[in-house]
Image (cartoon, rainbow, N blue to C red; front, side, top):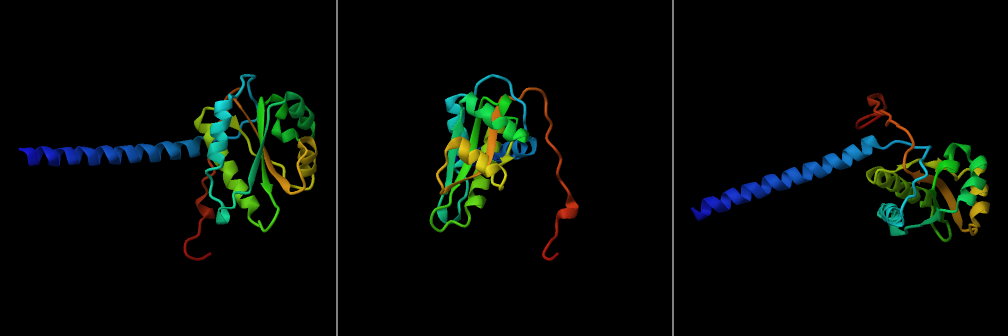
Length: 190
């Protein structure tokens, strides 16, 4: 009888673990597929705890040679957001209560800073989605926008902005885009 109970218990544990793992996978995939770009926010503030979670998620990203070149500037000052807004109209900074600028330290030998910071940004965006927040990746590494961000934030020469991510509670409904295109996939060879 004891052997039968042990076998039954082992079976229940295995089923429970499989269910757990499938639920985790489903939750992660659902979060990825539901992520959307949000450019209009309510006035409800994002908490310090939420910002820390976003930054912890960003810093959990993979990094070439584990250099971790990412640096972050959290902008809460509404005056700074309003000053940058007309210069970066696609970011819609005027409606955000906070923005996180993802930057890379380019000092030394660090040719993969953009890759690492991009991975950190995607983690940040997925974390925002998971927390019920909205966010949008707004490019800031090009010749036009990088100087705007660098000047507004007083970035040192070795710190380059990759993007500005406004974060907040979505104002209105937005839908994720279905970007699945099988014609863009090739197997083994082009």
